[in-house]
Image (cartoon, rainbow, N blue to C red):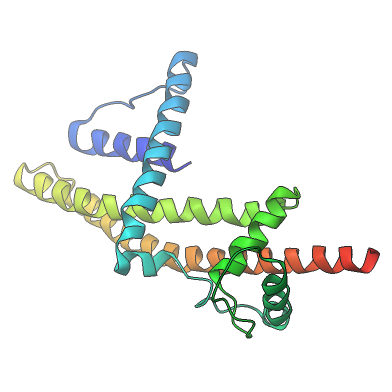
Length: 211
């Protein structure tokens, strides 16, 4: 999805500034296949940029990433955290300074996540994770679009292309989209964390009841 959006944005810029047609025609099977492959490759590149560049910058990372310790979890998740911390302290096979307080830890999250994954009970968590990754990548696309739009506005103004107003409106839409995207991305991150803890707790409780 992010890769496809990038290609369509390029098409819009080509049309506004150069009057060119779309890069790929959806009516042509060959073009459709190339469009699919290009979208996939660009999507992977965007994801790598997000994880290796955006998330390495503390200020930008805070906008789209919430650590397990800082997440504002729901009431049910808060109730089960002490039990999960206690069980983690008993089950782990490595040295750690993790505590058994009411506060969840990153190691606890990893422990619960991989437990669900190896036991093939990760589907619901993956749904939230996929949405979180998608919106996080949208954030990266938005950041890339801002300087591009500023340049194209300047280019349009200097060359009297009569597209300055449309491009300015596009820049405003991108800014609003970024603000909405930040909120949605952080919400999805918290929901993913809650789903990991709650799914793990439900499975462990069910297993202990049946043993």
